[in-house]
Length: 234
Ligand SMILES: Nc1ncnc2c1ncn2[C@@H]1O[C@H](COP(=O)(O)OP(=O)(O)OP(=O)(O)O)[C@@H](O)[C@H]1O
Ligand SMILES: [Mg+2]
Image 1 (cartoon, rainbow, N blue to C red):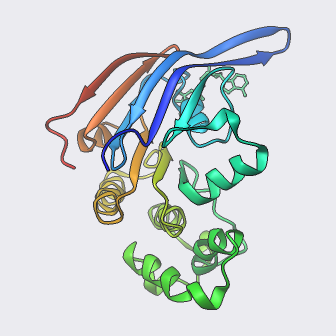
Image 2 (cartoon, rainbow, N blue to C red):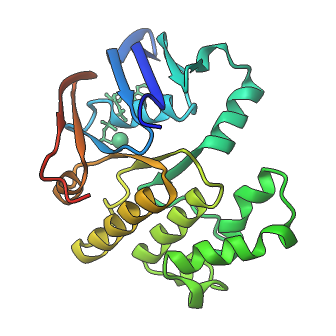
Image 3 (cartoon, helix red, strand yellow):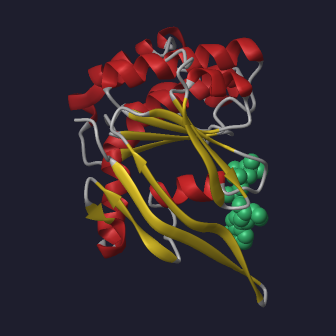
């Protein structure tokens, strides 16, 4: 159960910017265990988001390969890649990325409809997760009627509802005050333990750093340290 949900082997990412090439990731090799609770840290521009996007199959490496449970992402067709994302990965973003015209309930339901489920079969599951993140009484509201912390809870519920093996959270607490950040982290830790989903954050937030069990530091697209956090609260 423990080892190697994700493995990166010598991954580089080069972006073309006009005539120039810009290397955002240099030769990154890394393993992520199933059940991980870890973060990528490092200065702005160090490559954290780029790395999350590659792991989540939103973008492809320029060289090297990424393996999901031993299966190379580079050998997947576009359709297989889309299915990989839909079935295995939950994304949480700094700006929540909720669908503005849908209610909380519908935002959480949406990924299941995309996976071909019928609403009547999953209604209860959706409401269970909405309740789990503390939004039972807000289920009919739209995102514009919620606070930032509540929006991030919807995003967490939406990421979790399809029971993903991996949750990728790109600076999930960046727009939240301290108290809401801590509540979100507590919730993520609980979900990591209860639902057995690996959670990988990118963050500048020291509160996140104190929570995680492992911290991988990037500078200029390179891993400069990879430490287990024995004091991690999680
Ligand atoms: N599509 C792109 N085209 C060109 N350059 C890009 C592209 N995406 C990212 N970059 C560059 O790659 C580098 C890494 O960007 P990335 O977004 O991964 O950094 P980050 O560590 O997430 O930063 P932040 O903490 O500000 O979110 C940056 O220098 C950025 O300008
Ligand atoms: Mg980023």
